[in-house]
Length: 160
Image (cartoon, rainbow, N blue to C red; front, top):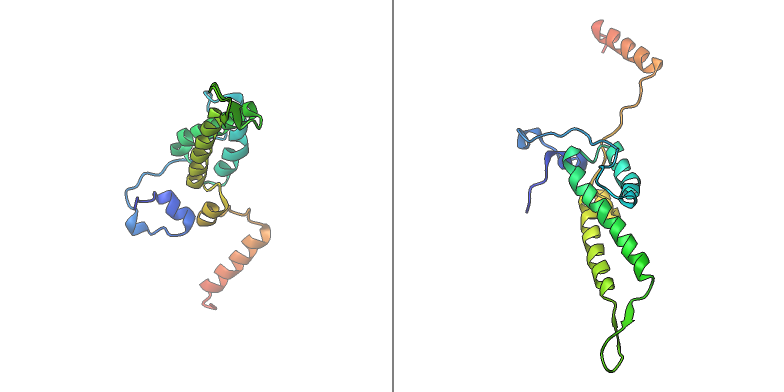
């Protein structure tokens, strides 16, 4: 069984500091898509990567794999549009039998890779249930500060 990185343990709620000392920590990724992506892949980035970045799931270490994922999804969508529902083609055989469109097999292979990568990023319902995003800090209100001050005064006076 391969070992999960510290960040995944934190997101899943199974992090134990004693077991993860010395592991590298990576900063959050930028929401800007990498420049080498095609326009279609950049659209996929905005749709699927940005929410993960904003929720603290993706770090700079994940950029390359997420870029590959986005390009693969864009290429898959383009191929499916090219196939246009034509899953069989006339063959060059003498009997004129129809055969499976070779592009369809390529599209199926691409979809298999896409779904495997989705599992890695928590982009499927099952994998998402295993990964929880870190809680966002709520901005404190004046009442929170007031009640914290009252509580600390009570502790100082020995009332607690």
